[in-house]
Image (cartoon, rainbow, N blue to C red; front, side, top):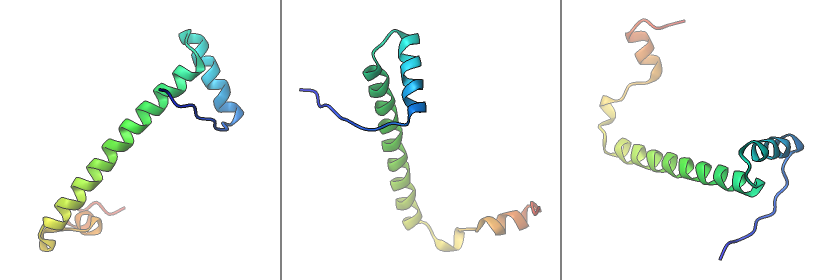
Length: 79
């Protein structure tokens, strides 16, 4: 069974959704559903990447880490 969500959107966003729906000859609900699916998929991938990075950081030797400032100095990248 599908769920129904109600939310408020700025008029500018509502107009963009309506225009795209008209161009694509699809209902506005289709546009919103696809946008949410894409956002959630990307957010979940970002979260997974972040978790992996934290795990790797916890395993790494702190002596092998360099700050951005150190890298800039080492490679003469100062502004």
